[in-house]
Length: 364
Ligand SMILES: Nc1ncnc2c1ncn2[C@@H]1O[C@H](COP(=O)(O)OP(=O)(O)O)[C@@H](O)[C@H]1O
Ligand SMILES: [Mg+2]
Image (tube, rainbow, N blue to C red; front, side, top):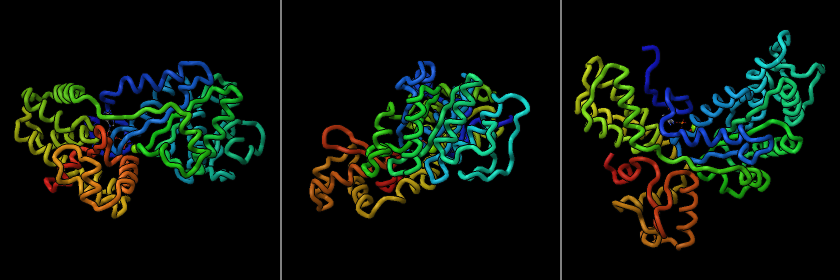
């Protein structure tokens, strides 16, 4: 086997993107449409482990196959430099032979490797200037460019600058597209109006669980390709345990193969062990990073939800916490933005990470 079929980690491209056909196709609509198509700016929102980064990587690949040059970076102070660097690297294949990488040129934007898209000796020093140069050079080669921005937040000055530059390129009729991804609250913050206008104008879509039936098909095909058999009921149990959560799909699949070892038949005991181990693994990889940034009040709110078997009523929660309805609403909004809870019908909320309810009840 050249590559493990299941790799439970974050930010990698899975062997197969399960259950995301319509999202992948949807992201291409803008690219296939004319320059300036509104679908060319998208933002994908979803909880941790829902597969946002995987979808961005898939989109980059699909865009490249359509002849676009693509670069991906996460919102951070290095965002703009990383995007330019990525474009230079990916764009190299479209430039006439003979143009070479100018290694080690530390430009104004902190380039480590800079490709001279322009014959001019010194290119413009601003991000917008560099981006215009790149897009002009690509235009000449008949190519467009796609910018991918992961972990977007509304309070990022770099995202603001990127948004402004992107809109100017669109105004000039350049062949550009931008796809972003972030937590559910990425566009609901009110810290930076300029970013918010840009993010709000982008076509938003929510990434939710993938169909369990698709997970089942994927498990079945993967096991078959490895020459392994599994009883239908065990297969269904493994798939259901993932609750359609992509990260858990990888975790359960990974431990399934680990526990079954060389055995050609996947038994019920291996399935049980794999599910239990995968659930435990959520503690460090999902719950800790998701719960760590929360305030004491946010945590108390979650604890107050613990004794409910199903969704919790807001009024009841405010009572349990001894806080006003308005204060409870504020906490609710913060936890939804962080992707930890979700609205569950009128005046109700529920935990939004898989097995978080069990974890809060101390069952995990
Ligand atoms: N549709 C999918 N099918 C199979 N695996 C997926 C899918 N989406 C994501 N994954 C895998 O799940 C894990 C978490 O995905 P990731 O994109 O990092 O989540 P996010 O960025 O939303 O936190 C990664 O190992 C990734 O390869
Ligand atoms: Mg991610």
